[in-house]
Amino acid sequence: MPERRLAYRFAEGVLDTVITWRLEPQGEGTLLVLDHTGFDLDSPTGRQAVQGMGNGWPGLLRAIEPVAAEA
Image 1 (cartoon, one colour):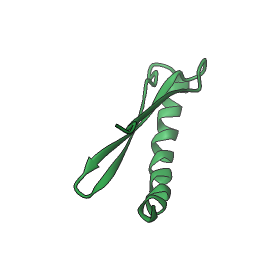
Image 2 (cartoon, rainbow, N blue to C red):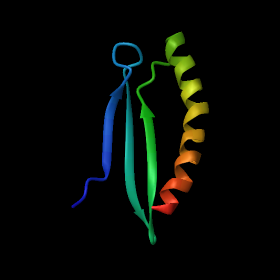
Image 3 (cartoon, rainbow, N blue to C red):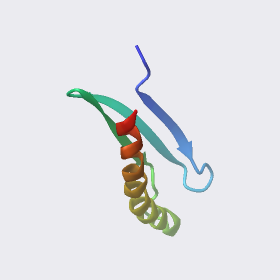
Image 4 (cartoon, rainbow, N blue to C red):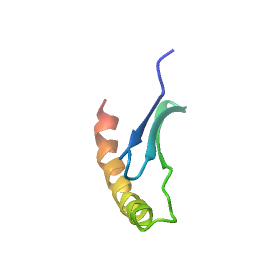
């Protein structure tokens, strides 16, 4: 069975978050799911990071979509 999940720690010692990418079968295709978890919302760095990542991830996923559709 092919692997469908990749998880790794991001910014250890600074943010200490976890990014997880999952592939899920959906109809005739595959859904790519991104979870970025573990932000410390009690710290200014954590709040700033979650806001920045929240603005950045959608653009990255939009950029991936046409490339993945061609594959």
